[in-house]
Image (cartoon, rainbow, N blue to C red; front, side):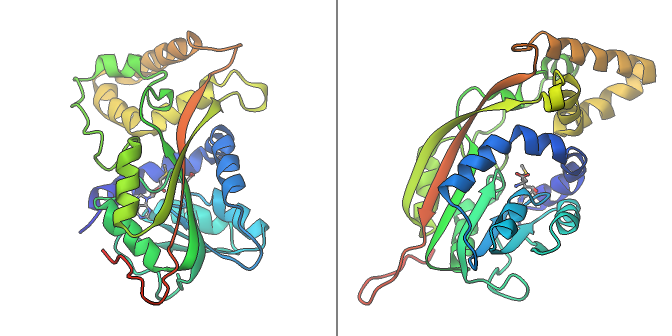
Length: 292
Ligand SMILES: C[S@@+](CC[C@H](N)C(=O)[O-])C[C@H]1O[C@@H](n2cnc3c(N)ncnc32)[C@H](O)[C@@H]1O
């Protein structure tokens, strides 16, 4: 089955996102603001949020008076989004293979949004073609994804754990995962092959600030690390060896590592993203549509 690894991974990993929704929404808030400024949902529009997670963008779309549909491959995320945004339709669906014109999804979307939810497809061209087929001609697509280059979101505060684990295999930069859309030419090619037009990528630099409500952000960043894939792997491998006390001491070392990176007393670093926009071409008589 397509995207099986991601389905399993996000069903488990979704629990960390749900538990830490407040942290993610604060840290990624500036990215949401940039996205919603570039593609503001309007009253009466049909809006699709791909990889909607716990429903941050769905909440914004409903507040703007749009009719919002969220799809996510993770049952854990969908349960949280349904509870958070009861006025949205939220479906457990794989945006690559499930027909978004049918049933509850209903198709005819005017706007497709995603905050870091579109980099996980086995076959991204098929996924973006599938999404496009559920859109009206002239519909807009807007999403944020992580940009190529140094990205502290995935590294800051991780050395202590990485040093204790077996060396991790070198990751394929284009493999499905959070960093798969770093290369702008690859993103352009995928969207063109999927039939989108007017593809535009703008480099957007925001600040990921973990200091919520006046904290130094150490516990917040620690939560995100420990509930993520590295933290879960480290705990599964190291706690049985180190024991409860040894694991607690190692976690304290992670805190020390984080404290050594404070900026103005807070865990805070640059977040390098692409803001990507495109359109579903309007097909006029005599023109030929690209249907991958
Ligand atoms: C990094 S999280 C972002 C969640 C949310 N958009 C946010 O910003 O809080 C990525 C999301 O994409 C979802 N996802 C991954 N592959 C998917 C697929 N093939 N179809 C639908 N959703 C998918 C995951 O389950 C996860 O909820």
